[in-house]
Image 1 (spheres, helix red, strand yellow):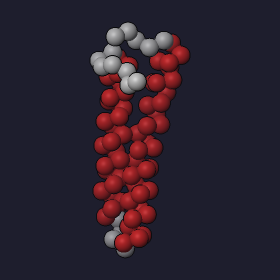
Image 2: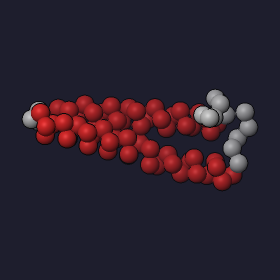
Image 3: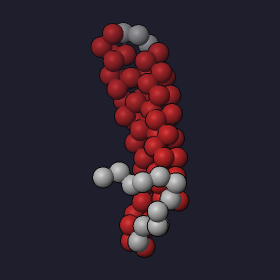
Image 4: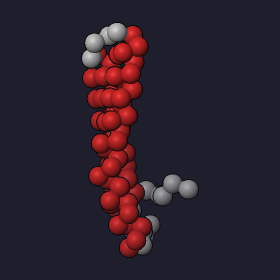
Length: 75
C-alpha cells in the first residue's frame, strides 16, 4: 500500500494529539457520571479512565500502522 497524499498524511498525524486525550476524557467522564449515579466513590472513574487510556493507545497504534502502510485503510 502506498502512503497517503501529503494533506491526508498531515491530517492523520495531527489527529494523534486528539485521539488519546479524548478517549481518556470520554472514559473518565462516563466513569464520573456512573460514580455519581451509583455512589461508588472514584472506582468507576478510575476503571473507565484506564479503559479509555488503553483504547486511545490502541487507536493511535492502529492509525500509525495504517499510515505506515501496514494494513489497508478503512473503507
